[in-house]
Image (cartoon, rainbow, N blue to C red):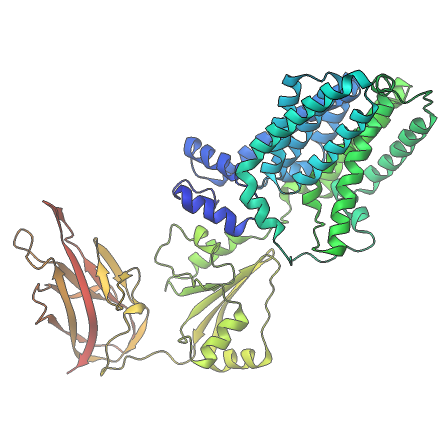
Length: 577
């Protein structure tokens, strides 16, 4: 949502993707356009991914139909439409559904090109091959497998057709390269990664991944095992007298096996080798581009069943048990599986009337959820709780009431010394826990009291802007409040040091400020334009001993005849009489 915000400039958009995502811009660029047309909301974003997923079902129908027959196309579409992995990534605001779609479409156009090599078919294939790389860096492995397939069919082509086939393949490569160019910088950035958060794969990494593709459902995996065995048996029964180009093309089982085997083998071997020899890169969602291979092997295996009744029963059982697993066993649409950032931040907002600041490791994410509450401050240094407590302990950070919020596989962790510091100086007043998301609210045991001999720390006022010298600059009408401070009862002078800008009053009037204490007005004034006598004084009586908030309201901002009325506050001081 943050990376595709239509309010970002194109440079901010580009730089944000390059810094955070390590993948090409295409998905986010299309999503940004959709936001411009239909509005900036998560519903629009999820519908966008959902549409991509539905088109992916139609794409696999086209591919299976071209690769084997129309019946296989229908079976493949049916199996994919109930596949939990495909459904999941058709609901997420991520490019993996797009990677799936363009991978299938590229293989679809590749098969057509191999059967009927023409310049038009080469261009179509080149376009979709280029779009694969624009979806995700893993697309390079897919394209490499496709070029191996082209090489195989170039070798088996009749001598009189080799030059033409090679030339058309070269044309498709040029088209792919042109489409790839916008993703060049992102791919280079990925290639420079020397370490990653993923761990080296275990001995059963691919087994676990294949199970995840089908929701780890025992019954579905049981059916798949039998279908795959049946497919392999039929494959081994194939007898081919020669391996000429036309013979392979006319043998659907052999032709489809060559396509699918090279695709699967390359997509598994390259990441496996790189994961052990260089940087780990095995993560199930990265391999969504081989999900079509598995679906098509199962599809062809089902289609090879000669008895129509048995074929219908097997297909129906697969679809039925997939739906049962989705709606009953996993209760997919009612079970929380993702970090509940939204629920956590809503509850923090509800329980944070004092607008205490929020410290978070994911400090670049949380502001999105507090966009409608701008008076809440998000600490912007991506602190862990351990680092933040260490900062307060060392004196680098001023101890004040704060929320610490975290999520996304980051549980509560704190050193023994850090916990002792918190226990000694803070009270844990709120504790929120959601799915993979949590927050604690800490209030100082000793409330801060005002030092009447010093200026107030202007940073306690929110929301305001500061200049380079730490002065508050008021460019527009502003309603700012301080944090809570402890004030004893008595008579006070509030001394305001500030100026109205520009030097000459606009319409004979300078910047006007109202001051309130816990919402009750204690005085108002117009700042002077004279920088030699900037101080103004408001006297008031306070008859309670309690925490208070000082509030000031700048209420007469104006822009007229090229002049803009602004204000600057150098300092605020409370003096007890």
